[in-house]
Image (tube, rainbow, N blue to C red):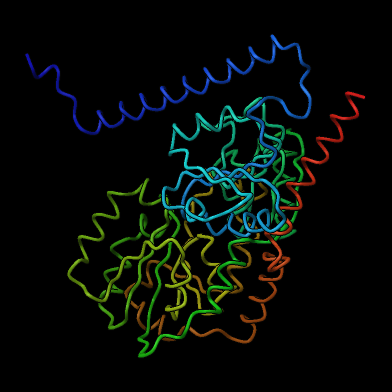
Length: 420
C-alpha cells in the first residue's frame, strides 16, 4: 500500500516549487488587495504616486550573468544621488553587499517567487534584460507605467525566442542597426511601435575596462575557446563529441565555456560531456560569471550564433570560426523576417569577420585552426561591425539612467496636466 504514496524526487521538487510560487503569489496578492482597499476608503484619487508601494525607478536582474549589464546604471544613479530600487534573483549579486546610499538592492528569489513579486509591482519604470514579458510567467503589472528592455548582447534584437520583445514599451539598443528589424516585426504582427533608443552596450563598457586592467599571461600556451549558444542548433547539442573529440587530440589547451542557459536547459548534456573528457587535463570547463578572462587567454574562438562572438571580436580582435550552417531559425523572432531571417545583420557580418566551419572539416580542425589568420580586410570589417553594434562606447550607464529619469519625468508632467 505504501507504494501508492511514493513521490519521486524530481516530481517532489517540481511540486515544492509550484507550492512556493503559489504561496508567494497569494502573499503579494493579499498585500495588493489591502493597498487597494486603503486607497478606496481614503477617497483619494490616484496621482503620480499610485500607492504606498510606488517606486519611480526599478531594475530587475535575473542572474549573475547580467550583473555587468546593470552595474554602470546602478553606479550612475548612486553618483547622481537618485533613489533606485534594484531587485535581483542572484544571491551573490555584488549590489547586495555594496554600501550604497541611494541604490536599494534586494534579493527576491528566483523563478516563480521572483515573478510573483514583479507581477504586482507599482513603479514608474522597470528595466530588465528578461525577455518574454506577458508571454510566460512574467506578467505586466497594472501598476507599472513603463517596461523597458535593455539588450544584453551586441547582436540582432530579433534573436530572442518568439515574442521576446513584443510587449515592452521600450527597447534600449546597442546600435542603430537593430531598429530596422524590430520595426519590421511590429508591422508584421500588427502591434504598437515601441520606443527605441540607442544607448550603447553597458556590459561591453565594463568588460573593456576589465580587459585593459588584465596583465598578459606568462608562459602562454596556444588556447582554443569553444563558446557556444544553447539549444538544438548550438554546437554542443548538435556536434558535441564530434568536435570535442578532435580538439582533444591536439596538444593545445581547450576551454569549453557553455552558455549560462545550458546549465538549466541542457544539464544532462553538459554532465555527459564533462564525464567523457574528465581525464583529459587539456580540456577545461569554464562557468565564470565574466567571459573576459577566458577570452583574454584564447588565441582563437569556435562558436555558432552566440552573441559572445561579437564580444570576442570587438574586445580581443582575434580569429573566429563559426558553425551555424544548419541553424534552425523557427523558434526565434527573426524567422518572421524576410527570407526567414537568414539575412539578419549578425549572420551577414559573421561571414565577413569569421570563417565558416562545416562538420565535415572537424577531422582537419587542427590544421584549420593552425592556419587561422585575420587578414587586413577582416580587421577592417571587424572595426566597421564594432562601430555599428557598439555605439556610444563608455556612455551606456549614463544614457540608460537619462532615459529612465526622463521617462518618469514625462509621466509626472502628464499626471500634473490631468489633475490641473
